[in-house]
Image 1 (tube, helix red, strand yellow):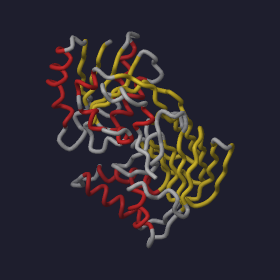
Image 2 (cartoon, one colour):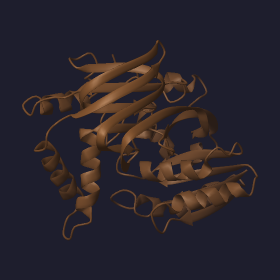
Image 3 (tube, one colour):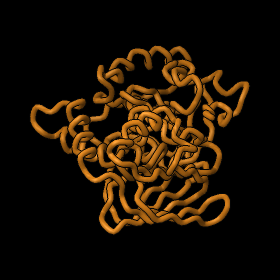
Image 4 (cartoon, helix red, strand yellow):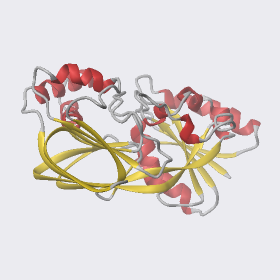
Length: 315
């Protein structure tokens, strides 16, 4: 098996990915592994490099060395190639996807990762786009979209862009009128109303640590759909604190469903955030891709329990 490492030099605050090269060389040569190291040069370059890696047709393990965006780009490049495995070396500022597994720090153990075992995990198809973690519509997606726009302004840093996006979103009308149709375990469910958030989740965390879907398991063949009714400006911040800590389920206006497909309709183009990638449309479909990818877990991580048992369970 070939081991292909794709390093994103822009990921994280200290550009940790670039420090990996000597470690990769030492570990791979120690175990006699065939390896290649590439560095991304522009947005979506990781997708191009991953696609090139799988085109040869031989068994290959592709390592996304960056944040959640890099992981998504590499997963997109791998696509449905059955001879390819996806591995994650977390070098970003959030690394939200791996937080749903106990001991996520194990993914930083390079030797354990190259000796690790791949297991099938689910994914989401979102209007033709692949998503591995969480897709959302609402206040959070508006903040993500506005933050990207502010970051392109002169003299605006990342934290400043985020704070400006929060302020603009807070002083805008809260909640979006949506029609939501879900294919759930108990049949078709439809909801119409104003929502602060509408999530389709394969993982648990997103947005830099918000625990929006605490019961999601990325290997169980189902997506979790979380609907949060709109809040007023006085109650939204206390609720967001509960939401960030995963304590919002069971509170007023919050519903959880599990199923395979969710369609969201809006009268005006509404921003959707899919693993950090934002787009706007009046109709968005989130569909389960069951057992879509072979995801690599570090050695020792799966010896005594299955992947689903590794997922944190909050009550």
